Image (cartoon, rainbow, N blue to C red; front, side, top):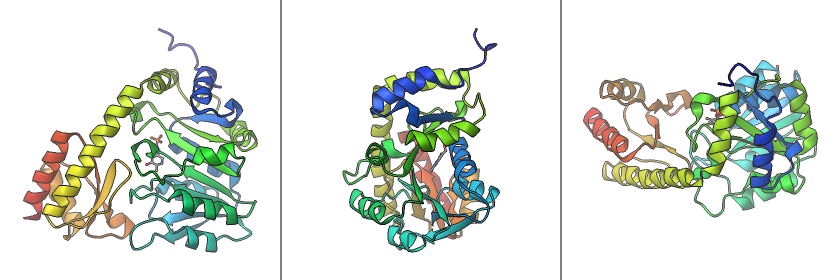
Length: 306
Ligand SMILES: *Cc1c(COP(=O)(O)O)cnc(C)c1O
């Protein structure tokens, strides 16, 4: 009954709640209409024509799209043969014109992470004129103890931004809300150009509730962990190569033309992400579902591949 009233543009209650939960400066938090909106905002704020942004290849396409829209040059650095992000090669690609580097951790679509040791070494060598963005859309699904929390580097005063979303582990993709955390000076620049009411009233209420719901988070991550193990086992039984994942999806090599497998799977009621778009013509990115969904997918895949 309050939907006739504009939302709180500053997201005050939500900002205070998140700041307290994460022990960060509330002035260093910005909310937007999904993390995708945050990514666009980062490009608008920091990139000018002719400047450079560096990202892994493959990684999340919004980084590239929003940077190109600003007339920036996008440098794509191929992942290593084991699908991990090649931080040494990214460092080697830094020039005087580099403004932003995106580290999607865990990386979408590979599901791999960069470790604390790697990230620490990388940050120590990164010149001051570069902002490093940790995209942590899938951080809650990680169980590798070597995972570096981007927020530790924010708290240490480094030139970094952390971007996160309520769309994935909290299951709120439909109401659109995400945020970035960083030094108040970096976040302040983004706030100056963000549209006033970027996050709607329902989204703010949903996010407030989600932050209190640790039980749901534990339940979702447990189902995901079991689902990952189940899919690994099945892929091994079917002798299909796959990439171990720290997220809620994984890459698997069907060893057949993925365009055809993609179409055939849809006839069985299953949609996967065909990885030819990342130059992996026989691979799929598969999202971990519920136990029943995972079983349905494996049965469909076996049928299609036979
Ligand atoms: C899904 C996703 C996002 C964006 O999520 P929103 O729904 O826009 O909040 C950002 N980064 C990565 C890597 C994602 O997979």
